[in-house]
Length: 51
Image 1 (cartoon, rainbow, N blue to C red):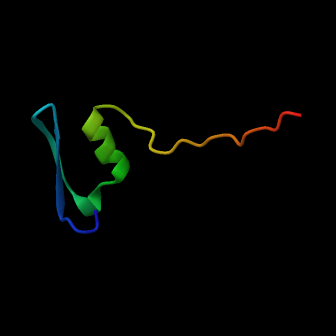
Image 2: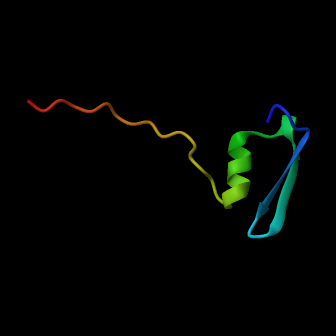
């Protein structure tokens, strides 16, 4: 996102949105791409030791 002024998102061959890069976020762009809210970070619990 550091090298663009604007970004356009298409979904299923249709233009969904065009945003100024500095006024959007990766989260918003991901949501526009898939058409619903997206969890970009999944935290895993540390494995427990079985004795």
